[in-house]
Length: 99
Image (tube, rainbow, N blue to C red; front, side, top):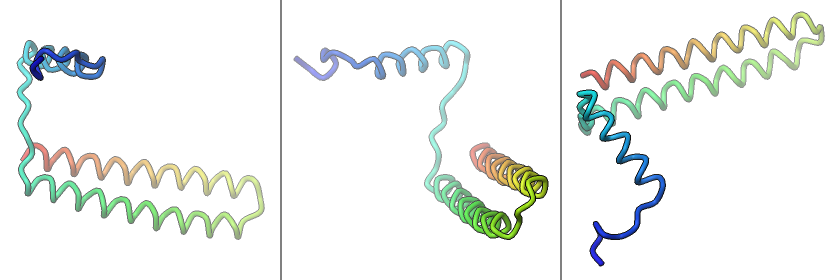
């Protein structure tokens, strides 16, 4: 039994269907270059460290504040900061992918 004749997993079958749908829709898959992969990894590492830094600062601020309203405001600000960092990261990665 050759490799092509071997039974396929559900994952492999689903991926084949998705590739066929992409081909039918005219979507071309362009592999990333080594430079693009390196740049994306650098962006991810940078934003991961920024998120970790923001998390440490947030935890420190939360320890100093006891009022529920102030804590809720800090949580809201923290959520916005995390969302902003994720958005910036994703837009930079998309820009790198486009070349």
